[in-house]
Figure (cartoon, rainbow, N blue to C red):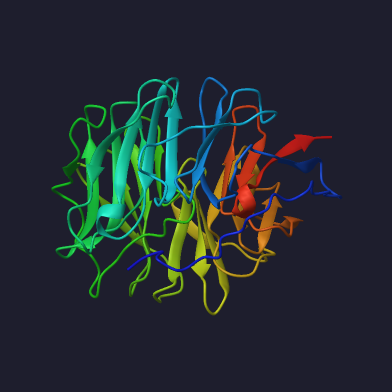
Length: 335
């Protein structure tokens, strides 16, 4: 029973945000959306395109670094919540999160012009949360517990077949799931590694594989243990895990260095971190309370926005892209 909370949807785009005392500013883009949904997922295509998706079946893309945005129509998806997206060249995957049949996987092989519904959850109690891909043919999905196991799907043929992972870890007593807030509860690292994060259980943990899901190790971490608490987001490439608790508001983060986990202190946001990403020594975390940045691998932090954001992703040039309610998409622009 994960991330099924009734978040408030907004309807207007915001104006630009002015940020001082940092080497970048956040500049808010204006996607051409008839309705302004909550955007919850971002993917930076290697070809430079910026993709975003969210509630009300919305999918948008920019081919010119955010100057112009184009809506992509997914048939019969107006009521779906696209909480994760992945793009590489002309191949685009979408994950819709929701109860039962509202959990779906889509694929486009023509840059979003047409879409194939590859998977629909048949179990009425099922709920998928996040996915990630090692390449356009090989990917992994994580969802809430089904039949006492953490629910995982894997594909090795570009989604033609999605198969439940046979060796998925047993769930903690009472169930276990992930938070589909930003699409970062599943992240790959390199050609074979992946981290999946869990919560809403007696012990939040990171599930790690180094062989594309054949075997798993479990790393429990002292995140809040409640139905609204746990690990929401991880960055395996740099060793970060973030989350906390929604109600009452608790922010929690850990950093892994030389095989040891250290608590991160003084993150200047209230409540669980929804999304996170890193580039070099920089780390940005976001949630409905705003956005915060560290330039020294989490040692010190400063708030860079009071506007709510659900997701953040860095591009290859080191610019961070943030998205959230009101159809807002922002980016850090060097001064």
